[in-house]
Amino acid sequence: MIKKTLTRMIAVSLSAVMVLQLTACGTIFYPERKGTKSGEIDPIVAVADAIGLLFFFIPGVIAFAVDFNNGTIYKSGKRHSSLTPAELKSVSPNGKLDKAALSVLMSKKLGLAVNLDASSLQMKKFTSEAELLAYLNVAGLTLASR
Image (tube, rainbow, N blue to C red; front, side, top):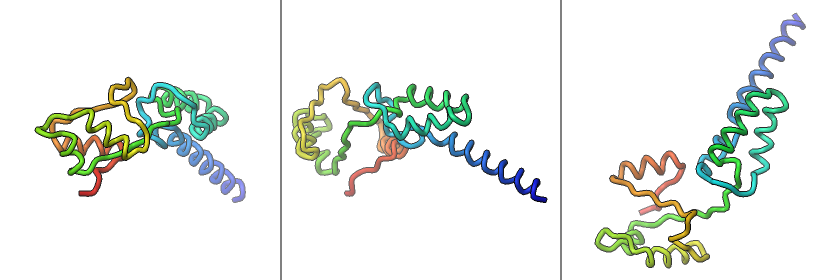
């Protein structure tokens, strides 16, 4: 009876560790970091991936490979901001984006200079509001309140 209980406890413990390892990586913790090319390695993600190396070598290697490939192992030095519908209209008169007006507005909102011509800036064009909302949902972002 004791042997059977001990065997069950070990099996449950190993299963729990394996499940935690499969979810313990930067891609799960920080999906918004996908696409980061380089930077400072996040110790939380590195330790989570390293746990896989200690207990289960192959899942640990895979976790590191996925995080480096996705760029989610790197700390994000990015700041995010969103525009209200009124702000969006003010920077896109006649449906065309005014980069200078957007740069000034974003600089005010973020409290730092914004260069819209920087190579690290990511801009996306959407063909419909539904496509935009789907992208925001996947990225874990929301629109500013109307």
